[in-house]
Length: 473
Ligand code: FAD
Ligand code: NAI
Image (cartoon, rainbow, N blue to C red; front, side, top):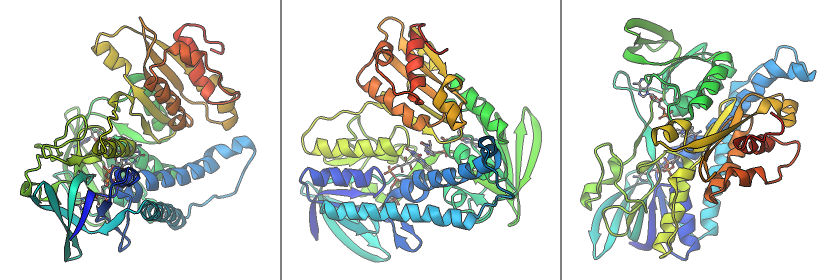
């Protein structure tokens, strides 16, 4: 039986990053992952195989097509009868995924990490160590670990009314792999996956209807930013209905019939494809947690403290399988922090500075508190808002929708939250994260030189606006 200082279960952005950091710190490290794509083990987890990376590839392809059909004419560029080759688009996406996944194997080799394939479960705890069993297509082997990092991630939540078949009733995997543009698509859940994947297929010509149970759109985002996003997505043709109650759903193999209630009125929608994107559930089922007494809560999450320590000595858990936002960068950062804690270091993780990005058009991104939260917490704040409409670079890009809003403490001027809707805000938000990590004031940002012409000038203007001294607004 092979012995390791650290065994990581799960090779997603939480697990593979934890393994690399542990190896960098001098631990003998193994990472076990069971994900299979195209009949081959494929490192990278949900994020790389069927999440962040393939979705962004399709968002870019569909955005290029939408620009060609809708906005290139403004630049004087025209093309008769543009066509979308969906097979080619999927092939490109597959290429990107493979390249990234092979890249992780390369990094494992470089860092002398043992890559193990198959499904891992706890077998026993003996003499302060853990025996992990690995099932690789029926061949079972075992490894011994001093420290275990569980990073088994999550899977899509199913509707009790209908199972996903990834032919007509899709989860994220099916929505990333449609080989033709459906004439119409119903999305249940106006969350991050619903809006991103709904955008992809809508841009390619599908009639997309989004049904959301909550009465508010994107409740976690700042209200003003969410409103701006909703307005623009609606303009693009996504039909988003809030406050629905989903009833019976049937799938006859050709079409899917969705019954729902809106304001007490019965409604029905018949579509070619249905995407169910109503959140995700942690992967703890196959872990055999009871064999070692690992504590799991009633929703299936592994119970951890602020440092990702479980109830067991030397067993840690990170990423989607524990509390907190289900985001790849959160999982990776927890991976780094746990490896460093195992090495006796004392890194810390600040949930308040985890950035959120939704890659729609316009993109929406935020960090820190929303206006609603500050009001609910009774914190006096000032705000500065600047629009992309007044920014030369945004006008040149032909994408000047949206704004940057900075919320700062009324008393101390410390930045408490930054909310952005607009072009490339997925990139612009990093400046806000850095500022908040360094406890910057809005005046600090206002006094920093921003390149001209650049989109970042809008952040600068918003910082100036906090002190009512905006120059271009
Ligand atoms: P995962 O990535 O889920 O990896 C866990 C791995 O462990 C998987 O390979 C799984 O097969 C394996 N595993 C599970 N159980 C076992 C076992 N018992 N033995 C061996 N292996 C096991 N986040 C962002 O930050 N930005 C985005 O743009 C973004 N886009 C997304 C788009 C979609 C469509 C989806 C579905 C998610 C997206 N996410 C995004 C969320 C992101 O993918 C997750 O937060 C992230 O992958 C979590 O990382 P993880 O390492 O915790 O788990
Ligand atoms: P989500 O939590 O973002 O959204 C789910 C939505 O479905 C919510 O608005 C919820 O109110 C709604 N809902 C729940 N049950 C419903 C029902 N029965 N009927 C109608 N609506 C219902 O979950 P989603 O979109 O599945 O994504 C899962 C996670 O993946 C996200 O929380 C996010 O962390 C991650 N992700 C991140 C991305 C990014 O960072 N850009 C992109 C995609 C996913």
